[in-house]
Image 1 (cartoon, rainbow, N blue to C red):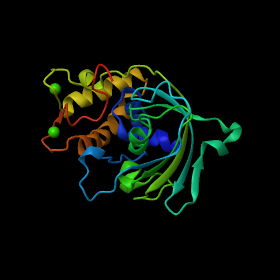
Image 2: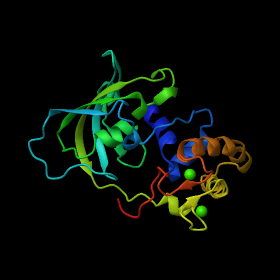
Image 3: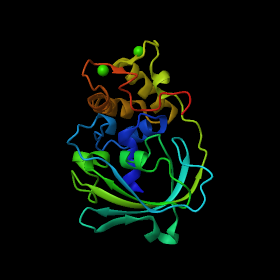
Image 4: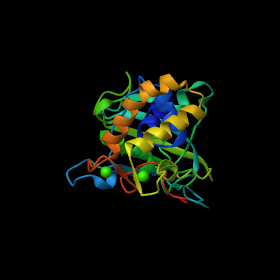
Amino acid sequence: MYLFVKCACVTVLGLNLLSVCLSLPQQQQQQQPDPSNQGAGEPHLKIEVLTHATDCPRKSKDSDILVIHYEGFYDNGTKFDSSRDRPGAIPFQFQLGVGQVIQGWEKGLLEMCQGEKRKLFVPSKLAYGEHGSGPVIAPNSDLVFEVELIQVHDGPKPPNVFKMIDIDNDDHLTKDEMSMYLARQAHAQGIPVDLAAKQQEKVLDNLFKFEDKDGDGKISHEEFSGPKHEEL
Ligand SMILES: [Ca+2]
Ligand SMILES: [Ca+2]
């Protein structure tokens, strides 16, 4: 579970995730580019359907809650994680499209039917990137996952985080606006002000390094990778 919580901290600017970043300062931020921005030579996510569903009343979409079993492998075939190997073999549950999981899953588990099994070939950049993840995932690791969708149902509508941060409503997020937002979140989470302030600068730097793609010092609506729509 650690892997995915860490990744959530990294990829999303959502409410809960920022507070995760604030409360876990030792975790590294990590850059995960939008796959649509990948160059032609960059490795892409590959999806192989292993088992088709016999019946498919609905397909998974962003904001859905997915209950899955998964196994994760290094590209040499060695297994590094499996929901089935955990005590009680309890499946993993998460919300799709809100940054709780790696980009390879966000894209690779869309349009999936209950009962379907897929194999995802996830390039490092859509997994844990150049930083890797703790002792388990080395930097620049391509990963392979076998995923079975056990259940899919509607999830809660994610908040429009962009709008919450953009106080002056000019469609751009400044460091000041982001800083105020982080402070509000820290306060709401009961994180001590001095601790939050100490971590805020680093969090802000990392956020802007990743989000401010054209480097103009502001994060535009287009650049922002967190939840920014009223409806998904
Ligand atoms: Ca603004
Ligand atoms: Ca910008």
